[in-house]
Length: 469
Image (cartoon, rainbow, N blue to C red):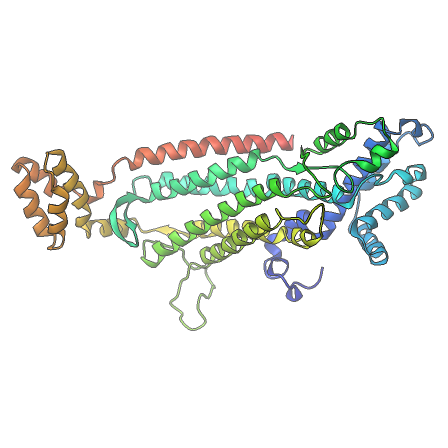
């Protein structure tokens, strides 16, 4: 790889040390290796199902040799493919020629005529991309979300009774709890994570325009639709029958849009925490030796949080564009999608970067519980809602208007209005009610949300274990 300082895109430069493992899914080497894997698996199935009579002369371990060829594909091998591509000007054709070369080296030259037979390059590409996305989803994205859910849920439970002032339209509304605030986000993240766990990535096989024409012409007795379906499913993908030369992007767009939606939710969480930081309700600290301002030594900025927000926003917008743009394809095929798909890795890597930095922000976060409580106490007018509803319970029709008018005059006028409307023994209780207790069913709601998060958490962790087994 080129020096990170010369990288054009920061995911391959500035953030490379954090994102390097993602090259296993989004680098050109990863794509070439996956293409070779598809070609090998197709060749094996084709020979076994279509040309079994040609297998007798082959060495007994021909299948094992082919599988090893695909599994042991190195970076140097990929460079050889790129060298061939520079000569032929076609990336998949280069993989085909490379495989044929290797077959002759492995004394399997009799298989060479059947490599890529009846396929178009998009038969290979769509399967390769879907498998890479599936692996990324299971091996990187879902485990990252599991760790984030652990962190947010634990904080929500820790702060289940940490009262804070709720704000609507940016101004004081009524009290809530910091635990409920976090549990809301944990639930929303868990809901999408569950959908990502169950998502089935698509694949197709169909030839030049999706009709299996060449294969049906050469082998008319074979059910090529069934052949294609079983091959796609053997790769762990869902067969998509409505294909042209390409796999329509509908299903992959659905996946990318789910990730984009999750990125937007997480970005909003970052903004909410940032606003709370600006109010001094939470702080994110500064590590020993860090500098947060080149001119103001006193500054302690929520840097990981702001980095996460930017990463999530860029990821969400890029994924949204890719998702909608790639739905469109001119007639049976055009190449405008090819360059766009090569950038899957950028927004998905930014998603991982955002999650990583958000976790770092939570690790640094200190919750100023006393300041939260003091803020609620300093806004006793938040009880105006409670008072007008209680008065309406007593049958006072214009209770809302009475309290609204009193609010304009201040707290004393609210109390005078209340006193004039309710019995004295009730007034004493209402006027002395502690606003930090005005949190309704927040604890019950928080626990309900966290129970659902726990259910999803267990489902995902068990699902990931099954995949590993």
